[in-house]
Length: 117
Image (tube, rainbow, N blue to C red; front, side):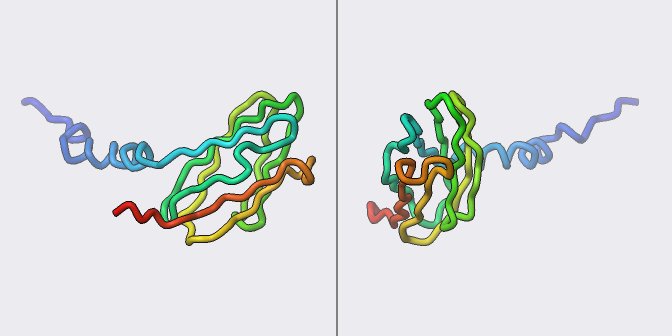
């Protein structure tokens, strides 16, 4: 008697791969920290969508990405890239700063509705 392994049936395969498909469609946006300055200082992202923010710390020292507006706090290790998911967010401006260099490491994420439709 031959037993079929139902774990790999097409139905289960679709259910297992669905989260990866949704994650792959997440838009990515990049910030760079160099000489204790975030570039770009103003980053535009779409409203009402979850996005992945990739922050590359090119400095030789650690920094901490802080945003009271976004409710995020993340250590940025020197020479490394860090990923932070934000959103979905309504339209508006969301400020962020580097905790160790708050006067120079500053920026704003501008959330806009895309009217390209």
